[in-house]
Amino acid sequence: MIVRVFENTSELSAAGAAQAATTIRCVIRERGVARVVAATGTSQIEFLGALTNSPDIAWTKVELFQLDEYIGLSVSHPASFSRYLQERLVAKTGITRYHALDGMENPKVLVRNANAEIASIRVDVAFVGIGENGHLAFNDPPADFDTEDPYLIVMLDETCRSQQVSEGWFAELSAVPQQAISMSVRQILKAQQLICVVPELRKAAAVRAALEGPVSPRVPASILRTHPQATMYLDKESASGLQPTTLAAFRTEAVETLSASRARQH
Image 1 (cartoon, rainbow, N blue to C red):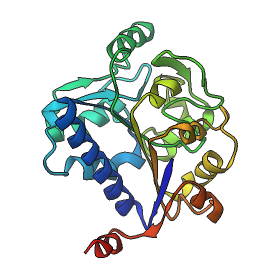
Image 2 (image 1 turned 60 degrees about the vertical axis):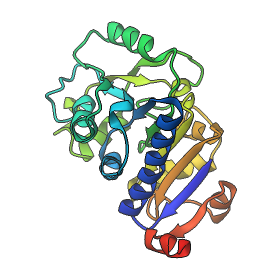
Image 3 (image 1 turned 90 degrees about the horizontal axis):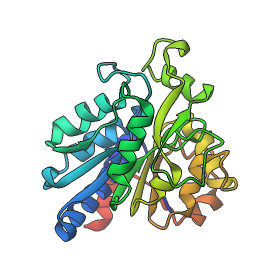
């Protein structure tokens, strides 16, 4: 796993998007289609914005899978992840193959259909984040590290639900659904490449637990350390709790700005 630390969220997002764009272009060139899993939330907005502005991506050759969705939430709701991806990724790029998760569908039927769609295909790259409680997708602690089912029905803990309120997606805790559909941990790890975008000070404790503690279901994001092609993008705030030895252990690049990086290349 590689950890990269940047001065701020904008530079972090631009660097993560550059890697994502390069990966998508290469896969399309080599295989004809790139299969992508995308996360949502406030932490992903700048990253997806930078990615959709990247040049020379044949978006009609991208097949998009959704990472998770609330059960019982309509696509018309501002917090709908399906709506989020439609507005911030699909509509901006012209992606035509989008496997949306409908929160109003019968959950068992939705999981069965979603599993059938993704079970036999190769996912080339997955974009993920880390929750304030260390969750990966909607796999809250203690997460199921063993199931091979691609999607699961999960219960959301109070820390996760409170985060959705603090980010402004819901007016109050009681409005946040208690259940969701989530891609499983094992399915996420099956992606050929993982790009994990984690900005902001409020994620610092979760980042430290994920990188410095044991690999454990109690910190679901810690499992990312076992993936051979995972890169975590942090800013100075989200990395502020890490020990220097931790950064060295994960082959990190030094804290940098994009301008400094470009200057070294010329």
